[in-house]
Length: 141
Image 1 (spheres, rainbow, N blue to C red):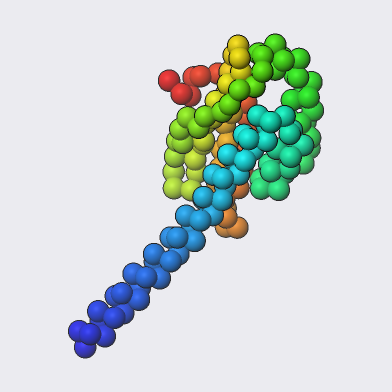
Image 2: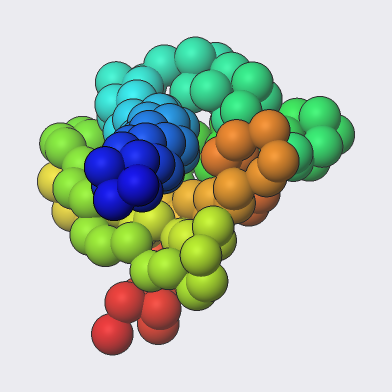
């Protein structure tokens, strides 16, 4: 009897660990997509960066098209910052289980820009629910 209970306990434990690993792998996937977006943006591959958002978010097509257009229209602002150098992950703030915001800084020769990805664990896995870039540091200090 004790052997059966012990065996059942380990089966439940392994099942729970397996489910958690599946959850963690999807979170890892969305984190990797944040990194990939930043690499593409840094390398001036805007269309590729926007496709990452389009294919992995609940953000409307219209909102993403508007975002894309606004980035294109602000190209002269980015040029005034100098050459894009690199980006760094700053932090992830978890508001609740399954809801987080990831912050990155894109470094230019003369300035910086802060990128924010809000990610949410939907019933179909992790998705981008909001994206913003600006020079505001309020959320970071």
